[in-house]
Image 1 (cartoon, helix red, strand yellow):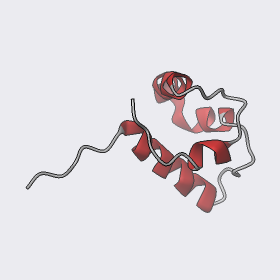
Image 2 (spheres, rainbow, N blue to C red):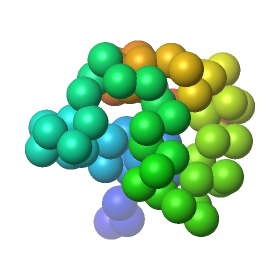
Image 3 (cartoon, one colour):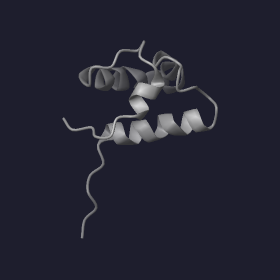
Image 4 (tube, rainbow, N blue to C red):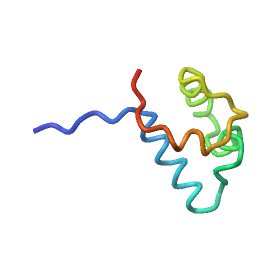
Length: 71
């Protein structure tokens, strides 16, 4: 029996949630703060976020409340 494929944004959301829980960022911080932590990978994640109509000015908390990442 195969495991369902997890959408990349689910993995990203989990990592960001972990950053919030560890105190690295706050849920009220703007998403752009995450860019500093993702370095070279940020261009990819920024595009993914924009595809889901997020901007880097949106609070991280908005990203964390998404329940489904359907394309």
